Length: 83
Image (cartoon, rainbow, N blue to C red):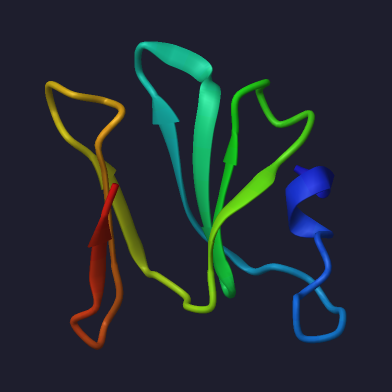
């Protein structure tokens, strides 16, 4: 988890507060994590992470029940994304 947690903030350093984690039930090496400053994904079980969405924090993350590649994220102010 250090590879994700210690990612520098785009605004000049610090750490990522991990807000939610979701593991793909069909591929446990495919993990999505919500942080204080975006969404990160890994396809290798956490060895490396890629920021897939930047500029906003989210509180909730879920996968579509029959299509695990479809993700939903939302925050307390009503903002949501679907990818």
